[in-house]
Amino acid sequence: MPPSNNNRQKNQNRGDPRMKKCEFCTKEIAYIDYKDYPSMKPFIDYFGNIRARYYSGVCLKHQKMLRLAVERARFLGFLAYRK
Ligand SMILES: [Zn+2]
Image 1 (cartoon, rainbow, N blue to C red):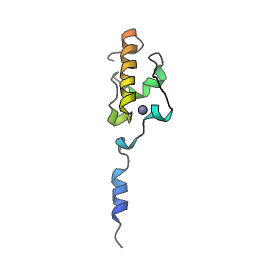
Image 2 (image 1 turned 180 degrees about the vertical axis):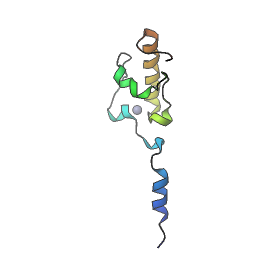
Image 3 (image 1 turned 45 degrees about the horizontal axis):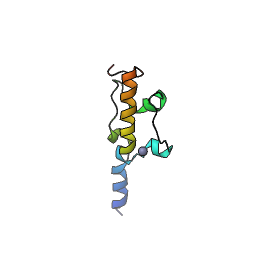
Image 4 (image 1 turned 90 degrees about the vertical axis):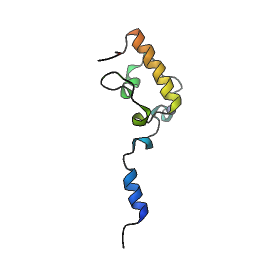
C-alpha cells in the first residue's frame, strides 16, 4: 500500500517557521519593556536588527510593541543600532 497523502503533507509542513506561536501571547505579556533586554534579545539578530515575524513567529500586535521597545532602547543606548 502506498503512503497516504496525509502523511506526505505532514512531512512537508515540518519545521515551517510560520507554524510557530507568538511567544509574548503564550506568556500573556501586555507590555514589552524597553529596559528588559533578556526578553527582547531572542528577537534581535547578531547585527542588532529586529527579526522578521516570519522567522520569530511573533504576532502583529506584539511585533509593533517589540519595535517600539527596541527603538526606545536604541535611543537610550541600551541596544546597538548596528554591530
Ligand atoms: Zn503576540
